[in-house]
Image (tube, rainbow, N blue to C red; front, side, top):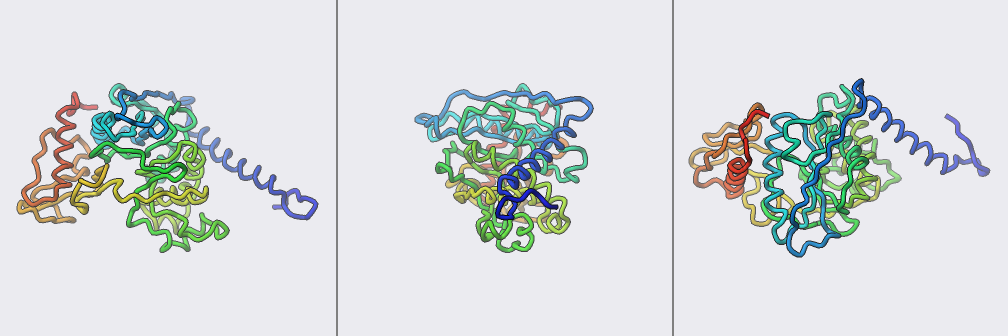
Length: 359
């Protein structure tokens, strides 16, 4: 397609900028138009846990905790535990935690609106996520950042299966966000695919950090720029069969890493940000437990990963109902990280009113 030329015979850079901006808003408006559907614009419900802050907390360093979630019971019970431990840790010394928002991308309120500060946003148009529900996450952030009043200069992007082990300080350094490095995000080993989304003129693919969007502590102003790109890259990756097959369930993580690199944002990689039992054994040098993996053991304390153990804790055991109160503790010999996780789940469920009520 030919465009207007300048005197030197080259395409005007201003025209290219206008075309790029136009393409984004065309995508954004398409999604917004379809997400509204026949019911008109969705209602945005906003809350905000403010409460007390950690002693000595610098207001300029406080971060808003943003949790993306669905209205599925599986997501709800994890969100309740996560929010409980946020409230427990927020006011303790060393914490830079500010407000809290659950960004609910189911398009309608659920039974936790009075318990957890929540903003309701629209999901992607029906069929757009192709069954990959986390594709709604970047679109949820785009909507939230445009609609919400966020007092803090920084944002922590978090997930329902995160438990705060101790007060979390702001690990970011100015314009350098902090992120957890995932061993399975390998940009340099996927250069052929990533070049579809990160062109050579942007530099080596090693500029793409081995991260996902969560956990990440980042300046709000940076995320406002990255989020639309993250959304568009996610959609393009999902529509590309080769990319979809190669990245599978971590596709949206790669999309965030690529989007950040496209904006020239480099993250400080913090292995102490979180641990993932049963592989990480201790909690004494971390801030978050991420319980994404199942924990299966014999009664002698031997790990039987991949095989249901005589004792187990696996969040997938509770797809249809929340875990009961007072879960049995692991047998002797099981790593401290797993013991701490179960104790923290038990403490939360013991203190959350109406824990086993039908939501």
